[in-house]
Amino acid sequence: EPEVTQTPSHQVTQMGQEVILRCVPISNHLYFYWYRQILGQKVEFLVSFYNNEISEKSEIFDDQFSVERPDGSNFTLKIRSTKLEDSAMYFCASSYAGATNEKLFFGSGTQLSVL
Amino acid sequence: ILNVEQSPQSLHVQEGDSTNFTCSFPSSNFYALHWYRWETAKSPEALFVMTLNGDEKKKGRISATLNTKEGYSYLYIKGSQPEDSATYLCSRGAQKLVFGQGTRLTINP
Image 1 (cartoon, each protein chain N blue to C red):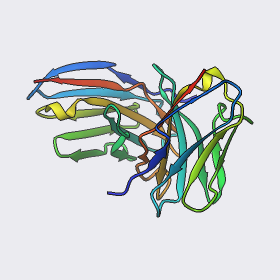
Image 2: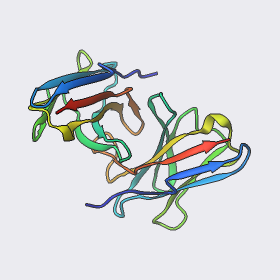
Image 3: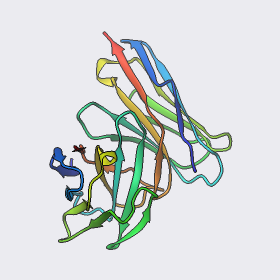
Image 4: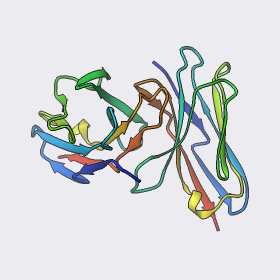
C-alpha cells in the first residue's frame, strides 16, 4: 500500500537554528497537512495545503513556520528559528479529498528535539 | 475552540474480551469524525471516517457508531487480540482535525 514517508526520523538542533522537516506524500494526493504532538499533549493541527497554497493554519503556525511543495513530490515544513517549545513529534499527512470526506494517511513522524 | 475528549485515557483488557471507549465532541458545526489507531513507533492508521448521524461502520472486529446530535462516538472491539494494543485517537473537523487525547489500550494475553 502507498505510504507517506518522512525524513529524518529524529532531528536534534540548537535553539535558534533553522530546521527543515521533509515529507513525501502519496503521489496522487492533493491535500497535505502538518500536525505535531508535544510529549504528553494532544495531537495538534499546524497547517493544511492545497493547490499550492495554505488553505488553513492554526495559531501555532506563526511567522517562524513555513511550508513548501518545491518539486511536486516533496512537502516541507521549515522552522526558521527554533525554540525549546518546538520540541515535538511532527507528522505529515496527505489525502486525495479533504478531511471532511476522506481519511488522512500519516507518516511515521519526525521527532524534533530543540536543545 | 473545539474540544474533543476521549475516555478512558487507558484501558487494560484480557485477550478475548470485548471492549469499548468513547469520544465526545461539540455537536455544533459538525463535518466529520475520524478514528485512528496508533501503534508505538508507527504511523497513525485510519480506521473510520464518519459523517452522518447514526452512522455505523465496521472493519473486522472493530466497529464504531456516531451520534452527531449529542456529540459522541463509540469504538467497539470484539474479542480483543494482542495486536489490538495501541492508542486509539478520535478527531473531528473539516480541513483542520481536532484530536482527543487518545485511549491507550493494552491487551493482556
